[in-house]
Length: 253
Image (cartoon, rainbow, N blue to C red; front, side, top):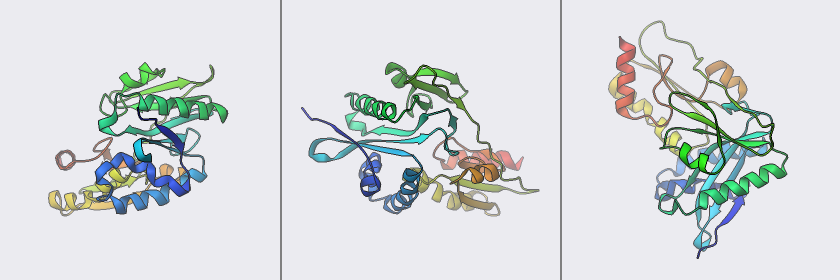
């Protein structure tokens, strides 16, 4: 039986947090390098990164957590940490590995004086509610396309979701595409980097603006991460050509 080792990552081995990409790591190597530079700075400001190691010390799972006091966290709460992402390699799921990882993180946060862990669940396809409720997370608020959950370490733990709407200004005419991303996820970076070519294919005359959302000042000026067509979000996650085309067609009307 394989013994799984869980490790809180530092700058030296942070690359292991991107084991979630599996065989695509080589494909996304440039995006991984960009994300590593971004994440190394975030570790200095209290972000946490974890990896789970399996047979042969191969990384098979990961988690990134953001202090809810950080301006980039969409969830606010005193001494609470927010799961930016959590993933176990697909072929190894439903073996209790994720539960062990969360248990270790919970102990670490407790030792650090933390009050709880928050997660934003999007249906059953991304960090599903059904899984988190089974391991002690309680619903805080349900939104049309996502739900905020909290695992309390202390009884007074509280969280609330803070909307990060687009703030970058609207064009007087025509189509404007704003591509705004945090640098944590190579998969999202890779997806967003392809958006300009898709836009040129669909709407050659569109104005494209791309920026990294890195600070509280960025959020105040531009809003949260995402792809926006004339100020309206295309998708809460990766953007495909069909969704982008529909958003552009809607903006033309």
